[in-house]
Image 1 (cartoon, rainbow, N blue to C red):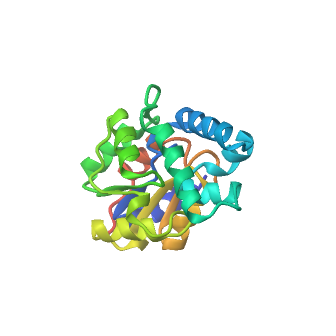
Image 2 (image 1 turned 60 degrees about the vertical axis):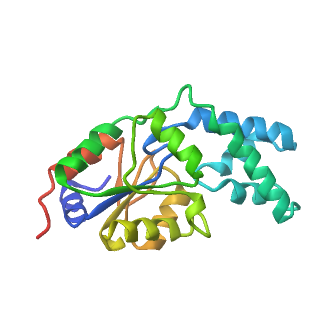
Length: 217
């Protein structure tokens, strides 16, 4: 993790925070895995292979890698089926540790925030709702022409918030999302032991760091 001096330098200019959803703000890992396991059984794919590459990526991108012989129409059908398996599976979906603490800190600091997710709008709203989170700005896979690791989603979120992307902090738990944040030109904060400008144990840590960082002039 960055030392306290570099943390202050990096966070002092933060004008907005852009969150991934699954695994970052919302603990939905078990539901995601159940859906990919069921989908894999239906499509004759090794579920371990699917789970190894699915996290953080749009369903259609993952399916193209798993089943490269499918045409565009078949990919769209397969992706729709994968999402359908997730819509009503919310029994164990909750906010991640520190999520509400961080969102409350952002409110106190007056920092705007958005969610940028590879889920579609129906699934994103269902999962955020299950976690007790209402995103002021939500950018889903339906709002972009290319999903992560392309930076389009994060660039769109920054534009919607009216904050230069270079002053945005992207918070992610998947390498594909961190690549998107870097490509957008944002600062990055990484969970789950991944590498970003900041490394986080959980979101409460980021809340404490933001609240203890002097505001940039």
